[in-house]
Image 1 (cartoon, rainbow, N blue to C red):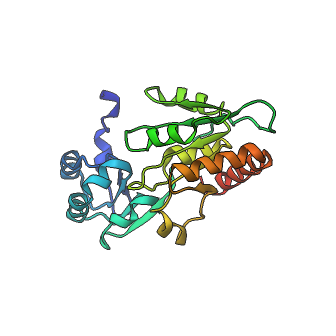
Image 2: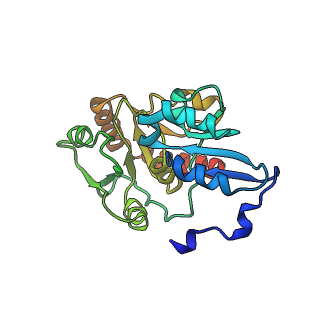
Image 3: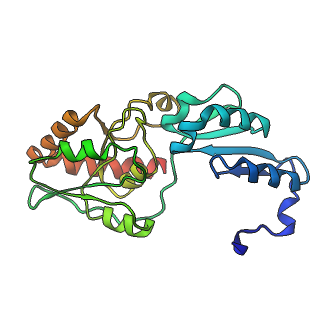
Length: 239
């Protein structure tokens, strides 16, 4: 798009400037852009989600080729990073969003799931909820603003059950900022908590554990209220 094209003066950068590339995997554009840059700005890249998980070996080599000073990775991806260029975990920033409603046990417990890809274990999550007295909505194929509005109607986000992902990413960060409890498999994120404050996510390792976690919320509504408070407090400190 024309509005995305930088002005001519944008390319004149110094060592005090940073170029931070967020176009995961599009190194052809990166290389073309760097050919136009004058001076020697510092370089950083960001990796999130499926693209780096599947292509980390090649991307690690390319990050070194473009002389990235640092790489920002979502928490579950640290296990794929090489020692150089250095990688640090990151939380996706959360824009102001409508808060979730409180739940005191009156009315249905509302759960949602927002699969942006087919790698979130959606079928297992659906199976885990069979027969439970909850309202459950799968939110997908909609714009980001609509996703945010529909997620704000829920009390709990069931993030994912994909053991090869074991992640904490954008959707969970946003949900916490809205005050939702988050239940998810986060098995591959432990290295991040040496650097960052661990989010108040209920860790589960499969459908059976997710079902038990939801049953506990139904039996003790105060857990949902406490989880909402913890989510908002953590988000205020970290996003």
